[in-house]
Each structure stands twice: as C-alpha cells, then as structure tokens.
Image (cartoon, rainbow, N blue to C red; front, side):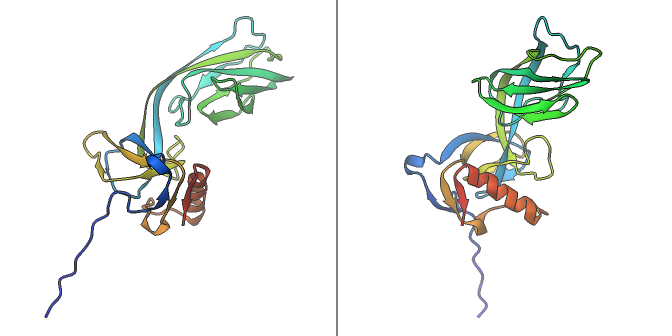
Length: 218
C-alpha cells in the first residue's frame, strides 16, 4: 500500500532553542523587501532616514564634506546631531573624530577616506588645510527601519545580520508588521534560512553578528 508523505510547514518560532523570559528576545518590526518571509529567516535592517550636513561657522579648512548619495543614513544610525571634529591637522590631510548624538566616540576618519558607521560620508581636502577644532555637524532624522533578508554582498547595511524572523510575513506586495528575535536567544542552526549562495566566510561573519546581539547558534 502506497504511503503518502506528510510535509510539515515551518512553525512560528520553531527555530528557537531558548529565549529570554517575558518574550524579551522579540521586538515588533516591519518586514519589507517584496518577498515572503519565513520563520527562521536571518534578516537585516534597511534604514530609512534623512541626513543634512553643515560646516561649523569659523572653520579654517575649506575641504568639502559630502554625505553618501545612496545611503547617508545606515541601519545603526541614531536620530540627532553627529559631530565630526578635526583632532589632528596635517598638510593636505587631517584626522576627524566622529561623535554620535549621545556624545560617544564612534570612530576616526582621515581626509580623503570614507566613514561608514551610523552615517556615511567623506571629507575632501581643500585649498586651505583643516585645523584642530574645525567641525561639521550632521543632523539625522530617522523615518523608518524595516527588515529584509540578509544580503552578504550589499553595502547599504543589509549585509549585517540584525535578527531572525519569528513567523511568516508576506511582504511581496507591501510592508507588513511582524516579530523578530533580536537579542538574547539560542537558536537551532539547522532551522535557520540563509541567503542562497552564502559563502562559509559570510556565514561565519553573520553568525558572529548575531552572537554580538546575544543570539547564539547551536
């Protein structure tokens, strides 16, 4: 007698081994990307927002400060004013320190290079060199942040794993609300959905990004 196999669909949260009490591991999120998201899909944040830069009155250097034309606001951006201040002067160069809206230092950038953490920009050398204390302010207004499938080859922030989709959310026609596991959980690695063609190096990097959020793959 022929047997008909029974195929079981994925269950909401079926990839979870354990999570923090009180559903603290989960956050309500918006799912995007014009795709159908399934439980266990590794997702990334796609930021939406605006940024405007202004030179401090009285700057000595006249090099141009240019926000990235495609992704000036990255997924880990904070709303508020970023301060970019020259801390070391040099002929036809200089080093700037970047402070987030809370005043924390998030990195340094040398004139002629690109900075990419929260905001993305470059500072060009001008006819007059920058001096210590020259400054640019970048005002960030966050409009939204949605989740899309992880894309390890992207450069817009969606190459960084930000969590795991909890349920099935069909965003093929429009963005939809849902839940994602974004912190402090153990997950079954065999139940996770990764992008097609992901390399071993990219997989290990993404697992490390999840681990930084407290999401441990077993």
